Amino acid sequence: ALFQISTLEQWPPIMHNAIDMTGIDMQPVINATQSAFYWPALYFVAAVFLCSYVLANLFVGVILQHFARFRGMHDGSILLSTDQRAWVHTQRKMLKLRPKPLYDIPTNPVRAFCFRPTQSL
Image 1 (cartoon, rainbow, N blue to C red):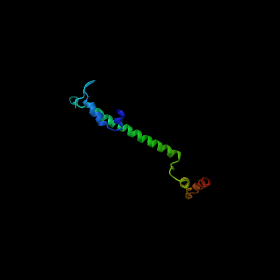
Image 2: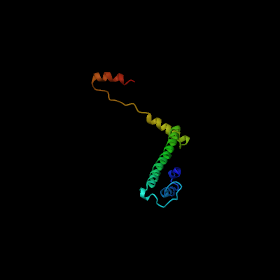
Image 3: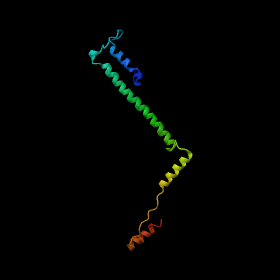
Image 4: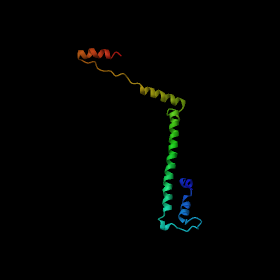
């Protein structure tokens, strides 16, 4: 019954049967627990919320885990063709390249003397 409640398939009849129960080996009475503040109804509503939340999180978690694994296996290019992967690889290499910065030669002779050997690398 808890699995049926967690999947949200026909859980209201189960809740109504629990509300109508009076005891072991006794006939059910409609709204028998009315004096007990509907504790079975609160139990079922709480079970629906908790089970639905847990199942939804498990489902989303599994989907995201598989997507992350496939993305990691294919370097983020699972839906790209071979030519497109090569282009993306080339673009990534181009973005890593940086031009060498050019600095102005200092006008102070001492600084210029120290500056020139450092720029010959």
